[in-house]
Image (cartoon, rainbow, N blue to C red; front, top):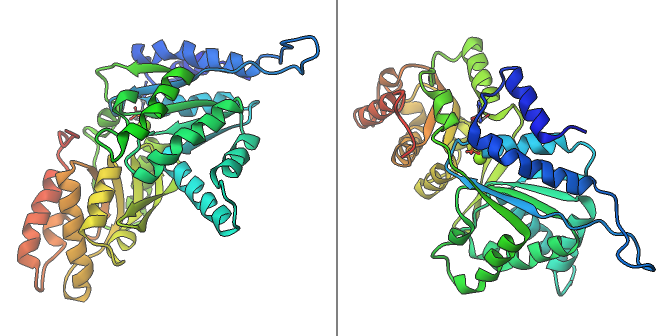
Length: 355
Ligand SMILES: Nc1ncnc2c1ncn2[C@@H]1O[C@H](COP(=O)(O)OP(=O)(O)O)[C@@H](O)[C@H]1O
Ligand SMILES: [Mg+2]
């Protein structure tokens, strides 16, 4: 059992992180929650069963790269004595939908209730990374789901890039969603992290992002960057594009990792690439081969992918068979690829940043 503020200080002292005033300012909130979760059950009346007091959660929001996810991970790490789970919000909602689907197939009427009960039975604290609601199917169930969680005494901690009032902004049937925003404000302490530091950008500034040729050394460099950005652990992220599912094999904290084959060797199209570019801040793309006649379709998809990443100002870290100008040397499309090569070059610039 370690207090979050102690753990943070340990990391600072060991040089793993830099002391940051905006981060330090939220540490007491995490300590408060941990103390609450560890409090002994109390009797509210002579003949009542002792119950644990409800612990108000935390809604931590602010710009990208401020360290929100890092703090939340550290918090969950500090709670080794409390049943807790850290999960990407989007992945969690997909899990809920999948379980509701199974319940529906079994003829259950109110499919949300048993699914919520299952979640409640397994945790006392849920930590959601990157809460955002863009999908009407999520918007319509999230209120009842969270109500069930709070009612059962589950504490929720979440990171988000948006203030609660802006969740599901301009979404379809938004008025039905508004009670959820009230519920959040009531059950969670809302804290904005205001800081001029974008650590993700800082970490990547000046470091190499394009690695060639494809050999063991390149692979090791990519592995090291991946570890640095994600701590090494990741989970798949499934995105829904027009009713289909596109899966990024590894994702954490806005950083995704995939191979050229994963993204360009399968039947993906512009809509998929736009969705991917929208969902990630950094893409680690490995094993881009030499392009030409033999892999014309893959090359075409790669051009579309780079365009999407470029427009969304995603940071691209990649390993390739050759420098951009030498990737596509012969065959139809070599001329068009010049633009892609130039974009790949531009995206290597140390000032290539999120807008
Ligand atoms: N105080 C800090 N010192 C050094 N690196 C940090 C610090 N805070 C965050 N980072 C690193 O910066 C990157 C971005 O942090 P992250 O928590 O993902 O930001 P956010 O979730 O707010 O977008 C991560 O690699 C994280 O480990
Ligand atoms: Mg984050």
